[in-house]
Length: 225
Image: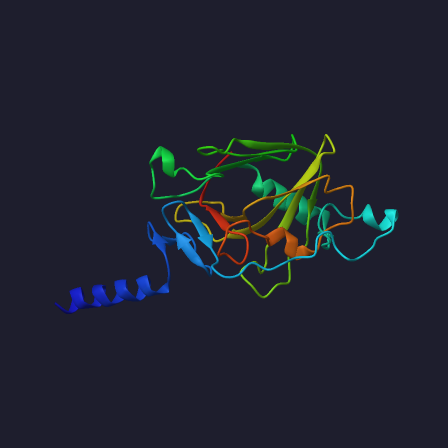
């Protein structure tokens, strides 16, 4: 009886800490985590972001940035390490298995060698892909919100038509995995974004969802190379 009570108390204590899946946290960050589709949402009133930035750069200064006015990762080895960790096909862990319940971006694929990235489609939302002529990796973002310790990954399209931006953070691995869980913000896309003044960093976390304050975080626990 004492043993059963101990197990019950331990189970309740674990449950109080956050969402667990197969005895491992899948997402333990802020916001509302929707386990049906594997993403975190942040209710509130959306912020208005000045876009492009009010900072005017010379052509020489502009060449140091992609679409966002953010410090690049200065260490080339760290930059390459981030891209190699991101490489592969990532899959969300979600409860909803119905065709109609498959969310946009259910899988994310990235190849640094090909400079290619793809997000899977959903009902009425086609697959999105980008072939990049340049990929920018930011330094860790010094923020005090849910995007603390994220990095921005920016893909400048090889056809010069735009720039795609995501925020990424590598969380601790699931049980039995030798790679981290990927937290990734819903992508932003700026048409001709590489040809004008860069946007403020907050622009990377804007959202088009009503009643939400900022970009959702998609959670990818599984990766195949």
